[in-house]
Length: 340
Image (cartoon, rainbow, N blue to C red):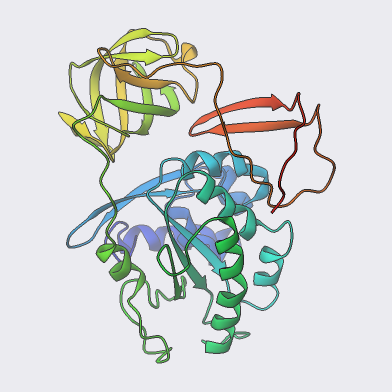
């Protein structure tokens, strides 16, 4: 964000001073998105942070999802809104192995973003400037060779859907501009790659659909989400499913800038009239009044078991994530399953 002008130098210097006072000098860069005190004290992202930056040709909304296993449900909520996932891996000796071993967060995050419907994955091999790595091509290749079979296993096509870039988050090497510290890397920088990446646009001519990711109260009911289809404008009359509650759009915010309208692909905050915050839950869908989305009690799903520690049978309890909806579930009938 700093390299693209999303955060100014004075603000970063302020974060650096505050972090130094708490003996957390190396954490200051994360404070641009870790804004609450709990996150800054623990050094862990808890909620999905939102920010944006712009390149010469594109506008990007960034969703900073939690990495710690305690906040995986929040991470899934962020992944459900994404067109592109960026998996940041530590190249430091021992850290990569810890994250990638069975049960590690690297494996879980890669699986979850694919399950959430993300088609493109950029893997940033970070901390290449660490004394245990020293921009070693061998270490980069080692990390890449271990990740590729697993990413292929969870459904990514390594040749088309995945791209690896060696970077240093602390120095900014290979993030915006190509660094001279690794002459063996001949590909684009991170910003150059995502700027040139072609991502299919969501339909703007279909009925309006926006799954609700979060909500809060601020002089009215504010609903957060990503528009998956259609367009919406100020004064539009919509339907909040599944309760069939009619609402009116009062304000539309795209990256905290007030707009008269928004369309498919935009991450928005919508202030509505006609419903109270307590009557809305994550997973509700804001949709068109003429062509509302349908509700259902049954659906067909494919269950792929990547790793399991115990017996899966009737009575097994799980948490079901469908886009931004989260529900507790129990397996009632056990049928033959193919394990991969």
